[in-house]
Length: 140
Ligand SMILES: [Cu+2]
Image (cartoon, rainbow, N blue to C red; front, side):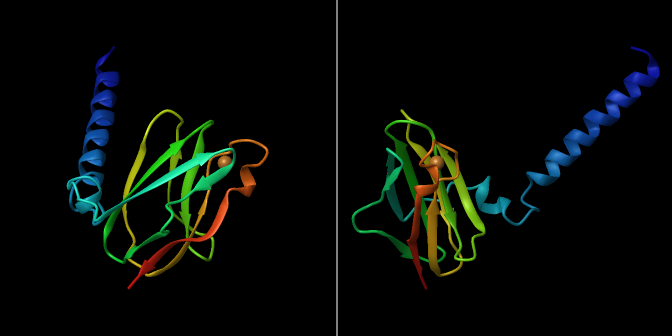
């Protein structure tokens, strides 16, 4: 490696370090709770996916806006996705649901309303049936 290559390598490493230090720092508004805090969820909701169906908690999924809640998703057969969508179809969050493990996500919904649940991972021919309109209710 000659001097010119070493200089470029140093520049690339410096760019990498500065970029990561900035994007992971608390200067980015959402990093305040996404990365540097361990919010304690007020509720946990168990979701099970199997045979192209979601089994949601019997009492439904309802909580207040601004609360941290935890979704614990399991699969009884293949890999699914668990995605929460606004009524206009835009994605709020999603996670993969791998069989044989508890897949966890802590989230805070700031906007009250009703959210749909869909599988966001192609899981097979009946994947598109995995749609539960209004499954998540966020109250003011
Ligand atoms: Cu699917």
